[in-house]
Length: 146
Length: 146
Image (cartoon, rainbow over all chains, first blue to last red; front, side):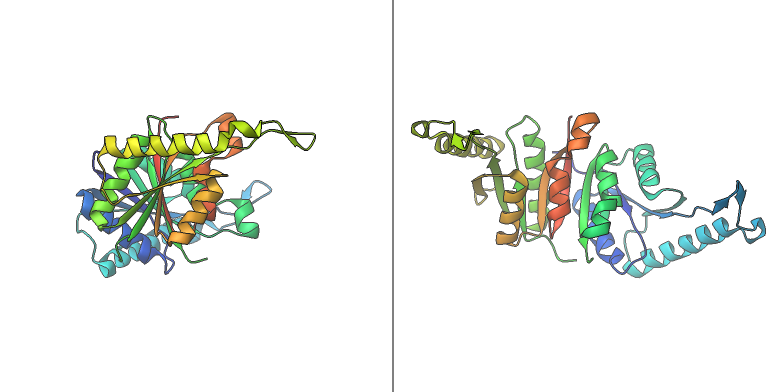
């Protein structure tokens, strides 16, 4: 069996992100694999009567992206993972961006947190579900609390 | 991060089962984890007008179970995995049996093959989906050819 060569880790900034990241570090170490971390900023400006509500001057997108980059860098520093870990912040749909980057980087494993789902959450599905559906590679769903 | 201690590997007897099994062997070796393999015989006798159609004398269930046990033993021998690997053959719904054994054995990772899904297959969902929904532990979906 070929070892995993490139692992993409999808991360939010919940407390459970630590577990997802640490699991990915372990698997990367075992496989001597390259690591890319991705956080997706799911920002969609409200649109009403075909007009964007957000005042362009605020430049909300740029601020959200910049905040996310800082948070991701801080998380990586705190968890003390491999120095060569790539840090990506993308804007858009979490599922779409994870799958896009996975395809672009030709990763062979995606690691993602998976919440237990009941009621509404189950009806709506989850990012882990959507990634499992769409990925051309292996997917490790790390169970995280509710 | 705690290493995985007990890994449950759900296996059919398709050609892709080799990849699922080998991936599980790798992860078990990395984590020094115990391995249990499970194959579920999804046999449901036809029922018509509240009568079982299958003649009881044939004892189809027992034969299917015995065949599956032999196939699983052969697969394990051919792949030359760890000698201590537990081999389980259960009868019933694949999803239900995987989740039942996972809970009973308190496994911390389920490894399962996942087919790409399009059209009908996607509408119907898959065992990997169902296991991801129901599992209390991590799930590694190993992508196998459609």
